[in-house]
Length: 389
Image (tube, rainbow, N blue to C red):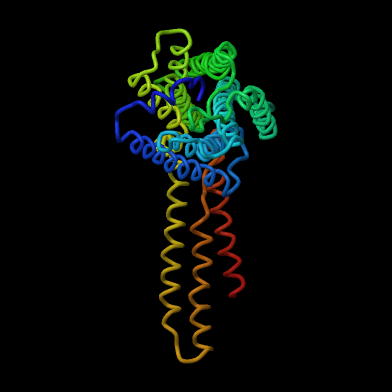
């Protein structure tokens, strides 16, 4: 990533025999955790139509960006440290690095948009309802990806496959001055400006949250819900800033400081890569630790998968015990299948509460719902008694 002139030669000259094994293993761990975790996030949000509010839509978009980064970038980058040559061809050389910066920009812009969304939801909950709609969120997501394509587009020509002393490599081909300007622009537009906006909006949000509520009074469910969601998003944002900071610092030192190409700087370069790549697998962990709704969704999915697995084993075991007649055999298969379908459909239902509904539901509405359910139950009992009479 970025400016990699001379790094291949340094990696060839290092004397650590296990480096070609340890680093790919770490990449594999990032790939495994990131793929499973982000897939679970998408499954929780998509299964029962939970993407009907702005916050969930942005979290979904962030999960898509992280999953694309994990799938299309991490495996190819891992092979750099385990193979001597770039074996994936000139197209993948350009595509992999393009996807790295595309998803990085998409994540950065998404987090910036979420910070503005959270500020409006908390500071102007009534006036911002017309602006914070799912339709506008989808438009914002399209705009985010459009900007990401524009900013990452130059990296299609930035890298190219070519030969160095009978070794095929995928390296930058731009002139040093052009690469320096490009890397500096990437740092400013993908990191500095978003971090400034994030810092401003979240400082304003936190200040309003802690100064607008009397600590002696009981906080409403709406306020509690907004605080929890904002806390989760802030944690995700801070991790993004911390994980990508070493990567940008290494590039800045390479261009503007004293950063010789030796074994020590090679290690720093590798660590900056690993930390930035690991950011794509930490968000699902944050969701699971902070949000009870995501925890419930994850547990439902795991229990559903486990239930299906156990049911399939029972089904196979019973079918193998064949009986003497074809009719008995068919009857046994039908008896096994019928309860499986009902149980699986019930098990796979994931009741994840959307953030906006949690913020808007008041105590009176909850009481009305409970009273309505009680009255419906009394009416059903009365009708049943009349029919029996």
